[in-house]
Every structure is written in structure tokens, then in C-alpha cells.
Length: 539
Image (cartoon, rainbow, N blue to C red; front, side, top):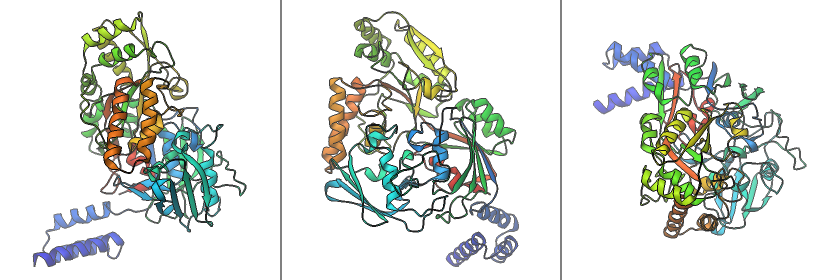
């Protein structure tokens, strides 16, 4: 009898969720099954809340964005433009809410021999916002934007091993590599590789607002301020993009984002300062969502800017930072200490035998003396890098002082930080959303051919060996050998690299309880993989 009752409750819940019965009928059926009225009412509310429904206008305040942003996916450099990309476009593959890789515009994909060739079979039911049907020509033209010596793409290094892209008919694309790449299906999900409509001659207008295939059609874009969208009525994903319209607001100041949420001006605020989590959690209409993923906060030292080309000086600064203090006082425990490598146990082939680098003023002083440097060292910071970056800089200056190292803190403007400071000045604060695989992370920020190599780690013996090992590991299919190669790559970064990976930070988001989502929330990027607009709905 108990099993029959459970099955009946499940069937009635499915009927309510699908619209087969209404709320009143559901409650009546629960009462007939012996469920008391308060419980039946709660059950109905829960089922309806968990059932995606279309409608409403979503307002999302994000802690990212700047006045130099554009809609060109190839140059996207922060969470604001990333959110724009995922709202208006799609990729060959995607990381699902469950964290697993799955086909997107490709309905399937398979490797050739030794993973030196990858074939993607495209969906046949996809149209761009301008009415054009998706074909292999669009995919080839899109990826060619990121290839070639003159490209401005930040993802150039990710496809540097692609020697040719061809098609077999209108719906089959073949990537041929210089060497094998077992992770290539992950790579093509990178947000820079949004598939755009071509003109039939191999050209793509990256400034067009209607060349995406995504769940929302862009209505306006004001760099560093807002982007507005309306639902695509012809979206090929029938079970996604539930809001009638969405507005993405760039609100870099953490206090302003929190106030906007509390005042009812927005429905979602991301990049919540850990200092305010407890306070926000006590507000009845607000819910805190915290996920653990690959986000990390770094302080990159550029080897091509003096004095950071000096290994002893880099080591002095690495030992002069009290990482646990940063976790305790900046993250308030919402994360863990970093160890100067941009990968963690969430990724395959992680080397957990590398000893955690601890605060050691004696070792810092020893390396600093060997460096021969004297005088203040400038550290550029702004909360545009991450919430609490300015405070983190002050803590770093205080701990370094114990080793006899003088840090001059330079407070930079939030606006323009990513275009004027990061990847230009010698030492600054930075955040990385991370990547699902080691090769993807290295190819995004650490290999010598990458424009986002924000440490300019090139030319040293360790850097040269690192680049060799990354290429070898990318093509290696023997997991034992691949593990050894990735272990070596991590050790090289730890011992010689210019990145101080100080903290692994949880993603913290606050939203009005009227907004809800499915049982899984992705952690490959903030904001459910930056796909809240596609995956969430109003309860």
C-alpha cells in the first residue's frame, strides 16, 4: 500500500507540473490519499515552484563590466560580456548545470585517430536571430576569427593547434590538428567561441546584434552599464529561456549591488562580498546561493616588467603573503588557500603532493636579500578585480612588511581596470573563473603564445619546459603518462611562475526568492555557468 501511495503522489505531482490538473485538483487528490491539508498545500507550492514556467522580466546586477566592453565574443574579458554571450548565443558544446560536457549546436561529436581529428555533427533545426539557418560554413567562419597571426581573439591559443577546418556537407564540421587534443570538445565550449552567422563568403560581422542563435535577442548594449534582451520566440531549445525579457546591469560596487537587491531594483546580485553574506541571509525575501568550483583570486607578477623578472623577488613575495589570513579576513572562510597553481582537486590529474606554500617571513627576507632589490614594490588593486581586493592588498602589504619588504599599494579606478591595469601593469589583483580541464586553463593564461598570459611567463627554462609538457599532455592518451606530465607542469608553475594564486573563492550569489532554478547549479562559471537567463525562471 505504501508503494502504491508513493506512486500515486508522484503521478499527481507530474500532472500538476505538466498542467494536466490544477492546484485545487492536486490538493483534493492529496486529501483523498490521506495527506493533511497544510502538507498538501505545501506540496502543491513546491511542485509549482519547481516547474519551469515562462514569463516575467529578470533584472540581474553583476559585479563585472567596463566602458571598453564590446559585443565581440572574441575579445570578451569579464563576467558581464560572458553573460551577454551566453544570453544571445550558443556553442558547439556546453557544460551543463550538472557540470558535465554535452553537445549544444552539435548534436554529436567524435574523435578521429589519436584525437588529431574531431568531427562535429550539427543540429538541423537552428536559425540565427537574423533568420539564417545554421550551417557548417558559419562554424568554420566563426572559428577562423580566432585563428591567424592578426587575430585579436583572446582565445587564439586555444585553437593554435588547429591546422585546418573543413566540412562534409552543410551539417558536418571536421577539425584537423597538428597534434592530438583529447580535451578539444571542452575547448569549443569556451565562451569566446560563440557561433555567429556568416555572409556566405567566410566573413562574420562581430558587431551585429542579430547573429546569435541563443535564447534571447539583444535589444540594446551600453558598455559598462547595461544590456537588454527579449526572449527568442524561435529558440531551438524548447525547455530553456523562460523569461520574457532580461536586463543585465553592470554594478561593480559591491555595496551598490547589495542595495539594489534589497531595494527591489534587481532580482539577482552576484559576486556578493563575503562580509555581507550573513546579513543578507537574514532577509526573509532573499536567498543565498553558494557554489564551489574553479574560481580563484590571483596577484599576477609580469616577468617583462621590472623587478618581477627576478626569480628570487617573485619567491620573496610568494612567501611574504599570508594566504590563510586572506581566506579568513577577505573570504571569511568561503574558500581555501591557494598554492600558486591555477588548478585544484576539481580537475583531473591534480597533484596533491605539492606542499602548501605557507607564510614564511624568514624565507621571504632571504629571497628578497638575494634578489638585490630595494625600495617599494607597486601593487595595483581595485575591487573590480574581486570583492575585497583593496583590503587584500592592504593585508599583503602588512605581511610583507614583516619580511622587510615595502609594498606600495596603488588604488586603481574600477572602470577601465581590465583594459588599463590587468595584463599591463607589473603586479595587480585579478580573478579567474577557472576552466574544467588543466589544458584549457593553461592554454587560456599560461602558455607562451597566449595574449592572456598575464604573468608574461616566457623564456625561462621552466617556462620553456612547461610549454613542451602541456603540448605533450594534450595529445597523450595514456592516463598514467598524462598524469605524470600534468604533475610536472604544476610543479614548474609552482616553482617558477609569476602567478601568486592566493585563494580559491566560492561563488556567492543572492537572489529574490521569486526567482528559482533546477536541482543542479553549474560551478564552471559564476551565475550557474553564466546561464541564469537560460536556465532559471520566476516561481
